[in-house]
Length: 168
Length: 185
Image (cartoon, rainbow over all chains, first blue to last red; front, top):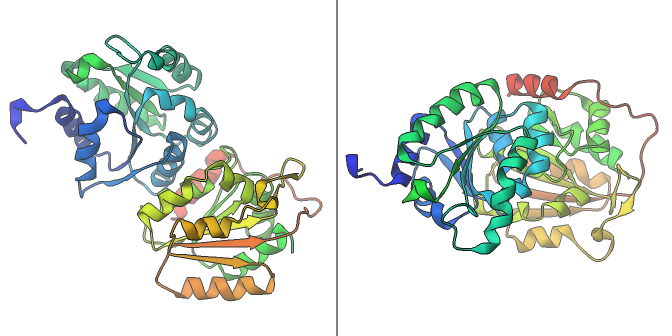
């Protein structure tokens, strides 16, 4: 990699590797294109795209039970497709996963249809008892360390939201 | 043959494989038939037994057997494509198809309306799909599969509706089930 000229996706990817996350699923977003590509080409991690976010949660739960450190890479609109799985599988069994979420429908969004879920994202995560951190700039990537050492380490899922400002 | 008898026959062939079981009566019946630490009883999140099993199978060497239901699989039909996309050799999906939601009063599912899950599985090009319609066929098929080194397999077992009487609620909580399962695998 290029060192100080790393893109936001490459810096995020490096952080996820540093945290030894090793089993990933994804449902794509334009903002996540580069990150997904990095994961696809990483022979050190287990990776599969999934057909729907809820399915991905199930797969990651299985991976956790097997001792993996799992993460889902997804767009915030998919949170609505996960709520039962978060509550009745992840929380209920205290199976933690890391959510890497592109935060659409917020400042900088060009697609109007993203706005309803943009507004619902934080309330939904809150009601589903998932701690979330918004990472709006590269300098805030250390919040991933905080979330993983505080929440994930206690078997609680943790979500990281990346708005448009992060990816610029 | 009801689901109970199908699970009995399946578990006669299981030794130290991992078993993930669908929520509701299937897990309760499995608990009564053969409780083991390597059984993961799914208690919530209907639809995801096959996905949990897939995540396990992609992470471990051991064989993973999932006992699913028709209603549950129909809820997460994409699972068949994701299984195919990854083709884990150690994965066996058993769909006990009683053409109904057996834990909520036996409302019908669409497998009673001309939907054949075995044909859908075949169309997804999962390594091998087997349809079983008679109780006597289960032991033979399971033994052949467990002796083989290939996979994944999708086994659809058509059963009648019906529940045995007096099947208790599983007496373990979710954390106990998780902890003992993780220790055992």
